[in-house]
Image 1: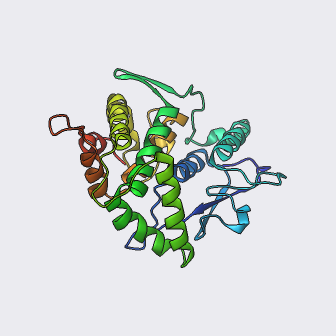
Image 2: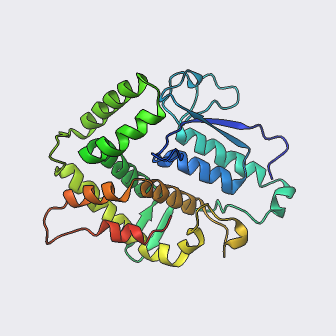
Length: 276
């Protein structure tokens, strides 16, 4: 239940489809916004677009939205701040507390794990880098997954322009050669090692706490031993986005980025334990 005075928040995002026509999103920012809206029960409307930089958002890269009387749209971080602020006000409404589905906002953004400290920023940066590198830099994933996904989701010739320009932008960012032999760069190895370290640090937390979230959809408070926290929402959303990359490409990329056969990061085994 939302506050009676709460105005709908209209969030625009790039809607992408897999080969079966099912909507699939590998942008963890979009997944997080959806998860947060669902579990908080905020009044949010998601508008899927076939344009990467729609006129409706004044050319801003999605996800984005206009807030209140602001002249310019805001991106994902601004949206999250606004949604969390709205949620704080909504919880003051007595009617909201009748709902069993409460999001615990008392969260400092850091998990103390037996394998080290896990800040939310580490989760975001590591998984965002892994998704970006695998889907836009690693040749086979870009050619066989990213390209057809964007071609079926964005109309021609915008899809062609977007694929070329965005990949060039990402390649420049990583100063990475994207030849057909695959990626074995220091950047790729560094990202894989960071991802392995992150998944190891989260392993015990996921095994103990995350069965609460091992469902197709984010669970309701009725099925939780405790209200899900903002940390849980971030972790669930980012792991879900990573899982949305077909396993064969993610596995192939991590293997190609290994330093040696003797020192293999078992990314897929670790990721397999972090259920969707």
